Length: 203
Image (cartoon, rainbow, N blue to C red; front, side):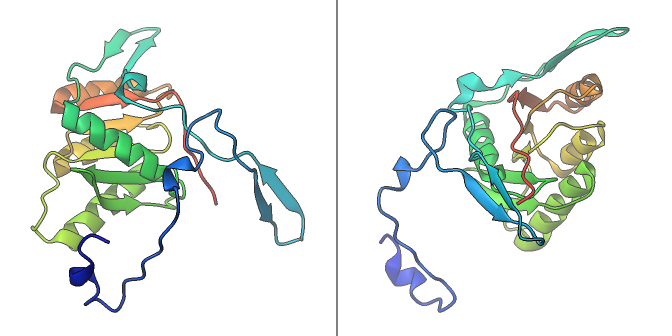
């Protein structure tokens, strides 16, 4: 293993070696066993595995929406190649996060996760607070990206992300107020893309 000599000094680390990890189902259409959950009353819930159709940056669409009164809204800034890589990474991580779920990432590393909150902006603020506490200046949030497992019902999540230095967002889209979030992105100079799918988990 790479860096084994460094990591073996930490007695709290546990390493699991898995064969052929890349063969695990990831994409919609891959053969996958259903998940089975046992409820408190003993009944079973059988569900299809949560898989994504987002395979590359080509599957991410610039945020756009039509409003019956205000017309068309389209995000002005496009994500950079590095941001696209981080947006994809953040989206994949978010598929295992309990909703309401938010993941902040930068340079292929998860900086913080906001999870299990009752409203979306609370998950955003939780993730930002955790990142600031964790790194304490050693890793700035400036230039980081954020994924949300479901749409933003209001623009407050975008405003909070902008204040923290987040520069790109990926989310499903589909809110009646998408135009407000797009407007907020344009005001703050943030890029935002839609997946057209949720990764909404209550596991």
